[in-house]
Length: 287
Image 1 (cartoon, one colour):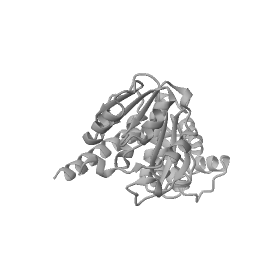
Image 2 (image 1 turned 45 degrees about the horizontal axis):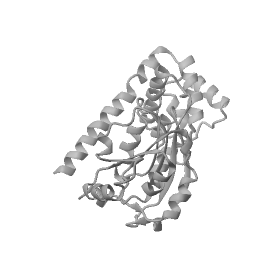
Image 3 (image 1 turned 90 degrees about the vertical axis):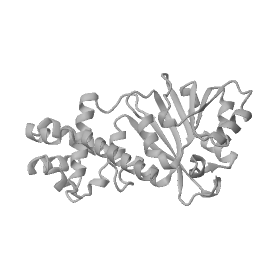
Image 4 (image 1 turned 135 degrees about the vertical axis):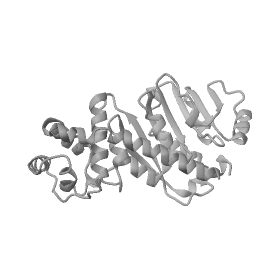
């Protein structure tokens, strides 16, 4: 199957103009578009008088776009897999209807510590959008909490299925992922916060009291939950990011060294496991 066969493309120019009402085009001079397809979003982007970089992996669409934009000086068309593409070494924004089947991989790449991304405005599956929005919407909000350290995620609007060709079987949404001016934690504390969250979530304890007891004393758990007004039987998947920050700060200040040692390396271990799983899935697809 070609990459183009796995993607759904916007067919409504009025919708594109509506989406653009959410976009801050003044924040940078460089705009990236991932998977321009037939160019309906590109048509509107090139009118912004910015440097537009459109990365298209599909050979057929790339050839058609080359002809269509042959005389457009502010658009650079690149034939490449975005996941292998080296992003600009200067601030940029992204406006894109991304390939839905690689959404998570795209998010990981554009939010990497070295990325110069300012804001990403992305059309994605609604289910994926909910995962990034996190608690209390997502069933498993761990990814969102980790992303929230350096970025703010907002649901801008839902998009009706009739705006696509071919029409998707799932609901979609327009989401912004904006880099914070200052991260919630410094680098060292950020790593510890990720370890803390991963360790807690991997205990498979649905309620906050039981989950926290794996790294904190009963008294500490009781005090902190009282301080942030969270009932002991609240599900951890519904705990907001800001409350996890308060819980973590208490853990750092009062938990014994053995508890801090217990969580160490949890996030790195998770990344290794995810990488191995991705390799297995790719191998199966190649067979």
